[in-house]
Image 1 (tube, rainbow, N blue to C red):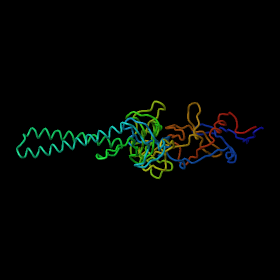
Image 2: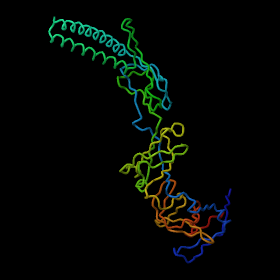
Image 3: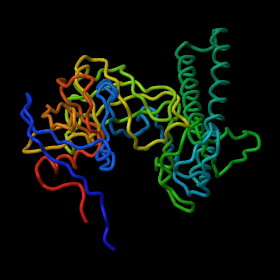
Image 4: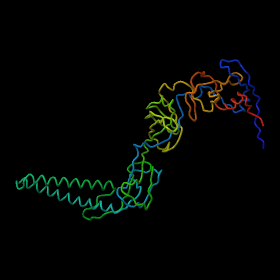
Length: 364
């Protein structure tokens, strides 16, 4: 089936101008039917805001890991990567004989500490009565301090393992431990599986805090030159802007961009970790006060030179411009065009084809 397109009678008429470029003449109806869209520069977003690709990340300083306190077996996993958790929520259960040994060592240290404390108190009384020498008392006091230090060590080891202190009288031990979230956050990684045997210090969970997220923004070198810490960053869907925290001093090897970091407070709900999006940076430096930001589609290239089409009486005229910066969505051109200039922002490729005599935007 033949696809019929609109044939427009567009003539290219040489016309004297300062630029020396021809005028592409067409009626308003022809322009409309060709899909041309034009806007005044003063109505197009000026260069004080720049769309840049960014990714939402969690600041490494807001990430903590939960590792296996001792060797054992994973008995249960209760959360998966990507789930949010509350402080104190159970993440999983670990079981192993080393947990029993840790509690036994604690009870032994506690009993020893009680004996050394009693010996110190007795020798202090004897020394006060002049029965024993001072050297004997100092030896007993040193033994008491060592016993107390060992007990504190074993008590801290129990806390690190997530175990409660066992009852000295009953001697009841527990061979399992519940792993609990130390804060409100999100599970970034949960690499273990039920039934898996682990060595001590094996990674169990990686958790990140969501009270503040970070943005990693890819900026061109030209744009990065005008960005300073504290500049606001508009994030789609977020009521509060992010704030620039740092600008890398070097280019990335892959895409020759500059990594710009920003902090996004109270981000829960408006963005998600590792989400990719377009953000608007508002540089405070004068480096970006001049020029015009246009959609990428507004720019055409001919013989290595960038051009835009500017509306003129009776048609549109190609005008050479100087390109200052370019991204996937926008380009920034140097000042020179009057603010009231009307620039084609869509359909420039059609005008370029007619300008170069490659055909008309119609036919069968």
